[in-house]
Image 1: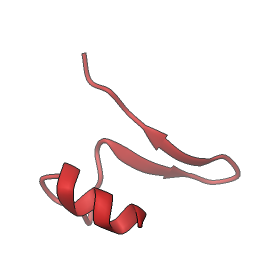
Image 2: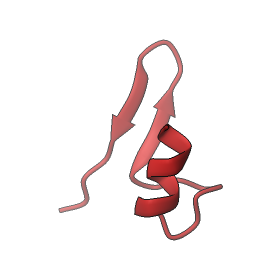
Image 3: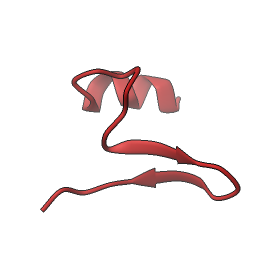
Length: 33
């Protein structure tokens, strides 16, 4: 599911900028202001 979201949100899904995986935490959505 997260891979599908990355393909829709990211320019380059293999190097995510917005939806990242944080070890020990889970997933983090980074919002650029």
